[in-house]
Image 1 (cartoon, one colour):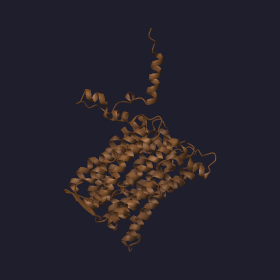
Image 2 (image 1 turned 135 degrees about the horizontal axis):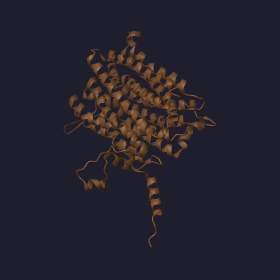
Image 3 (image 1 turned 30 degrees about the vertical axis):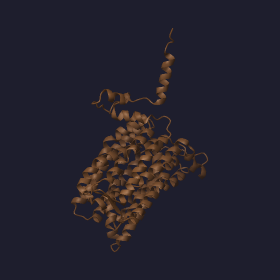
Image 4 (image 1 turned 90 degrees about the vertical axis):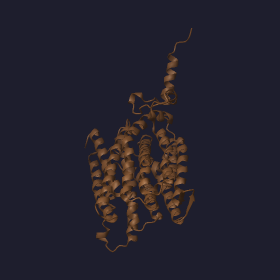
Length: 476
């Protein structure tokens, strides 16, 4: 087995391979592929719901984890199957040349469901493995570095996919099939890397009764507050997020190349700032990071509401908005993973991770399906206010915008005792306090300061003040 230092590098490389696999097989091109088979808003809603709807499989994984000594081979076996499960979608013209487009579409939906079910079955096993293996000191910082390289891998693979689909001369069905085959190769490489990563044995509950295993995360007050927030956040986000690609393709009229290029540009934001966000989450806590990132997540919905119906103008308007959104997504991902790994005990860790994501996923999946049904039922509805036209897409984007703003307030209910105030994170990002802004109105201070200048926590401040008062001599 590799030493931990070498293994940590390997885990980063594996993450890059996994990102390439994901971007080639589950990119926005999937929606265009589905549209070529006759998909409606309802079908898109189902496809958008599956990544979160299948999160219930994490509970199955968590129950299993309390009855095994090691996770490696179960994770390895099911993940290999998952990496190959979409191959039949690509091979339909060879295997089933007479299959109708409708059956091909439902084959895509069914295999996508199996794909995400296997992803979510294996994810808690992998995260609990990493939670037991990686040192918790500096974990968020390491996660940020891993996210950095994963984002750059996503950028390169999305850009390569866009150029391939544009210049290869293949139609979307042939081109997407090729991307699935290529993605499968990178996905297998990702899994093989972990053959050299050591695995500590599973720390099981002393009495792994099903009821006890399932309820323990919900009985922890701090973790329960996190579950409540993620449930509401998934509801708010999934009102609009699954339909962004369909809206840009169907209503705005953006072509696949420009759409993939838009998502490529978006990933640049996350790539640039993910390491910095990991550093901030490590020093200030996960709670303020979630509050801050959630507060600005309504920006993309606002941009979509007033997006002009011109593909070229729409592209340039959405590039900076998507870049900001990618930064926020990176912050939320780092904070979510950091909170779950740091606030879950070694005993029953897999169930804590499952509870932190699966319940929220079910809420988000149901929301996406219902919203897709609403879009189908309201097809053709529109109204004009001045020179601006609004349709059923704008209704769901407006609803998502409002709920995302509410979620920013909801994030304040997360309980993380050792975290800092959110204002301290803002000061660290801007590099200036409100008083200094008044004193130096034209000054702009760097946010990338050294670790030694990071503000202390509230608890440390109180202790320091208390100690200074004790050391101060009494006046005569």
